[in-house]
Image (cartoon, rainbow, N blue to C red; front, side, top):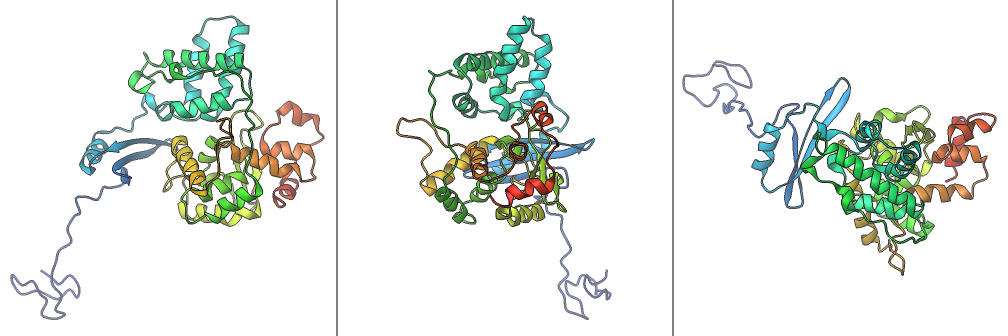
Length: 369
């Protein structure tokens, strides 16, 4: 045998080298360390969360499970979990698109269901297993649509779940739609953050884990689910822009220039996470449930009220998008440019204008925000 440091021959059965005096401790395999592709475990409060992922044909497949009481239980789940494409990874929109052609109804009825289902657009790209009743109820409550459209939204969601349960697409065979309530019509004032509240959020960066994400969200204007879906690949370093968005044709693949107020924050996150989700958890995609929980925790800590005196919720993660739109109101710029940034314009409306705004035109707006 030779010394692990200097390479000199060792005396028989000796633990020390006669030349350099180094104790010979052979490298040992750490049984707690998992190899690539075997998953990650981290602690959330008093429980453990296990995450396993891999890439298949360039697409990331991720499985996550929370609530393990012991590290051993989380390890056991990782070892037994397969990352084959399983049906419960299907998104709400994908399941809806499977259901829609199978439903036998008149065109007018289907049109009502399609219009109603858009109430849940923030969750289109959310896996079925990550949907939560409180988020769906909030989307229904906050929608500006009429009562009848909301009723159609609930009916359509109910039909989608009923289609998915016997086909193995819905975890635990739980139909969340049956718990939704279409409440009496009320038009609570939905608002964005005031300048004072924005300053409070900014001052909490580095003190509260969600302050930075919420602050960036207010200057990007994406819907919550679209914000969480942004990856480093969506960032154009040269032009300092992000491409993302969901829901409408104008909202998809929407180009957003980045305000100087958050440029350094965004680039720091991109540098940290390299090739993963910009507004995620250690590079993993953050769930809407986690973001909502962190958002309300931040509001509580900053003593920013999320309900009005009548008990109506007036602030939610979607308020960051309202804030972005409000900030643009006082900026003198062509309406087509503002619509392009917020993603409200349809392709037909954009064609009504002479040309599509370029990056420099958009920067004139976000540089002032």
